Image (cartoon, rainbow, N blue to C red; front, side, top):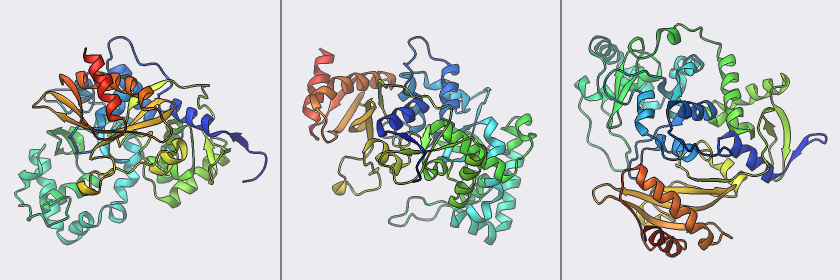
Length: 411
């Protein structure tokens, strides 16, 4: 990199990143309501959705990590994931994978809706080409009787083949094409299943009537949102936040540098150039404590997680059990400014227990120093989930100390 660039040490970059994501702020001490949840969304931009529910639905966890235990029904109301009349503030679309996003961002993603022919998954785009009549019939059904579930289309799912994640029938695939193109949207989720309806019955008229920016303008704004949420980042970090095509991401970052909205900097140990959001906070220390969803925006781009924290993280849900290193649903544990441990968590709702299937410290960390803090966070999380106790299984180097700390807390 050329001389003259501002130099940022790795610890400084880590603190900037943590502050940008909301981890430098103390957790609220009083009642948590929609205002605090909105602040989290304003800061990080979106919540990634995921179907796995062995511990807790992933979109609830980033709010928990930043605010502590909060009423999940408030987030449900903002996302219209509850029955009855609600004041919807979030909509569902492809942001960083399937995501909940503030309504104001709908115009910023219309370019993605318009580019579905090139960008949608192969099977979804292929069905639209091969069975346009089915797509038209499904759209007419949603228009006439929405919201509908995939089963309401009358199509039958094929038998799932070995190794397949999904066994969508053509009706579901047609709904997903219409969802991608923005012709329909998610009215709500019930037991995590999408119920589809037309945008006019879901998205406020003022949002639907807002001007559609050019793809370039929309992408620049998405990069701005990503830059504020990341603090300091490489171009791939910024582009990945909303999964922009790499060519577009490079172009938009270069334009924002030219406009003076991003500052090119040098972060110690990073090979690629980095870009600093000029208004990013630069705290001298961060005192955080949080369990992080695998899909938390702080860590969802694994190369960045490794660069910032020296933490190599691979989710092992789809790895055969015998080949898993750390477990099925593993959450990194953030303590202070570092990712110090990882725990495989399962909510045994029938037994009323939050089960720690395994617990491992990171290299160089002291299990005894971590165990008390982790036990406290697990206890608070179990209570938030309506579970009676924490149980620690004897797997991992952290497990003995953690089990002792849990027993001491329970008296």
